Length: 142
Length: 90
Image 1 (cartoon, each protein chain N blue to C red):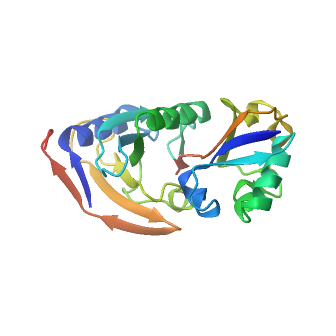
Image 2 (cartoon, each protein chain N blue to C red):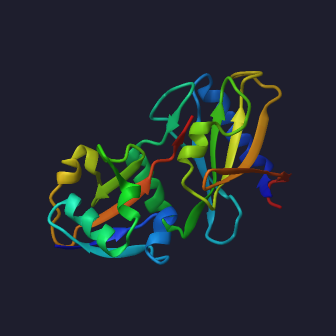
Image 3 (cartoon, chains in turn blue, orange):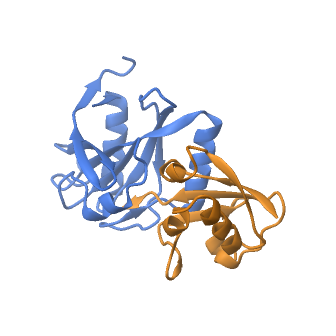
């Protein structure tokens, strides 16, 4: 199960809407072994594409250095799908490389950059196996 | 040349759980070969028949080796090498 604050859910959805129709991507870091996402880190999609995302390699190194310095791990790795459902694509599964992370997908296919309904789902992706998990959204601060 | 190599979580199965290992080599290709000699299986996760895998990033000090000389990048004593899988998808 992913337990996450309303504020962080809103941050991911706002980022997905802002970058629509391109895919948005980022990380929510949290203290090692806590399992709790706390620090929202939106990343640039270096691919600037509606069908692909990739963190810029220099940004990626800086992100991992920052997390190391803060004793954090990427608790959540999120990205958006802008024309399809919030479910990992074959590429997502093939490239998933953080077995400890919650992979969160946000779909903006219904409302694009506008306010309104959205899909947000969370998955574990380990060795090519996808397992959906429950998302428990809690009031900020809980 | 002896260098520290930082290993990402997903490859620590090859290093007995170690986050960093030491390796020897005058070029990145030699360092990767030395890693493979001491941690069998890791080389295949870094390289394919065309060279460095598309979705693996290797940095010498703070520079992505794709902006240096790739696998031919010269390695100096006490350089630090960081391996990070790309965070990417579709």
